[in-house]
Image 1 (cartoon, rainbow, N blue to C red):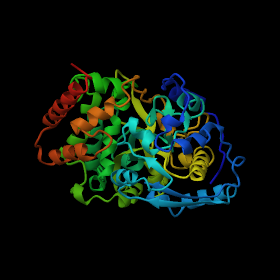
Image 2 (cartoon, helix red, strand yellow; image 1 turned 90 degrees about the vertical axis):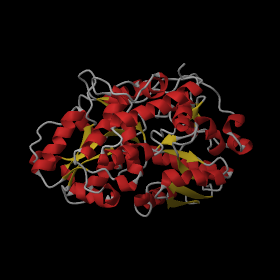
Image 3 (tube, rainbow, N blue to C red; image 1 turned 135 degrees about the vertical axis):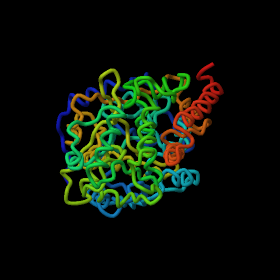
Length: 460
């Protein structure tokens, strides 16, 4: 493990930084910090902390709740040892949760869940102060860190990204070559044609859905904004204020085109024979060994596939196959964010923030996991070289006064984009029988989405 890997990535970082919209500055106050007003007021700002210099004699016993169950006994133990060289009085115990997205909400409501966790997407922004300590002013933090929009409210940041992800398709380059595919597909139908060639000319499963794992199905939702439209305002404006956003477009862009790829792949028999028997852990080795050709997963998955066998050099990553006006775009978004418990003791809060800052700036976690570093000016993993000529899109923040509107509509309509696998799972299930059709499924989505848009005043 290499610490303090400092390199320039001015071009890519500039693209990403330019995608972020600045906000007016406000001072973080005890009232904004939520329930533990006195404790939060005495915790230093994240930007003021100097790791290895401040609070080196602090004593704390931290519990860290994580979704990265595969790293709890390996990589994370190495991190703890490194951190304890500077902070010997701090102990850190990791707890991995397999069904993280479902279980963490229940844990949070108890208040006594630990000290650091990965902030769940289901939380409304106006609830963040009830659970997490503020890191500081968003405008100030954006001078050093990117992708802070997801867990910021009224210019106060409550979550620091562990890494950034690009949303594309992980694939086996050798399988593509063996199938006679010489160019990366750039449209939904080109991708489906490539999958058919793989089925006809190799023994590999063209597209492995990982349906049984459940959580993996939400990966499809991640493509419907920037990757499918090229518009950094689509997630927080277009999707919210447009009529019938899930309807089919003539140019096969937008959300419909994303779900079309999944529906048609299943309907044409280009996926595993029985989706209910898929095995997430086993799929990594199958991909590495050329038994699987493609999977719809974020860029975080690339390293896992590369390390799952002896053929890591065969693993590649491509943009999602949608082209907008002759150009390809790819969504770049934060992975889970680090959140510090507002109910923890003052010392535990300070120690937690020090550890989060160490993870963010010194551990190389994002780099080693194939993610985009959240600190400006860091080196990007080699996997992103495959995206030359493809523009990265980071969603712009919601307009003032609309910070919770997306979640309000998403939850009320029960469409559950990015928070529930149910919607995407229904698409796969329907495709196995052809009933309902994709058009019927999307019409139902539009109906429910529109009703919620009207309820919350997003459209008339």
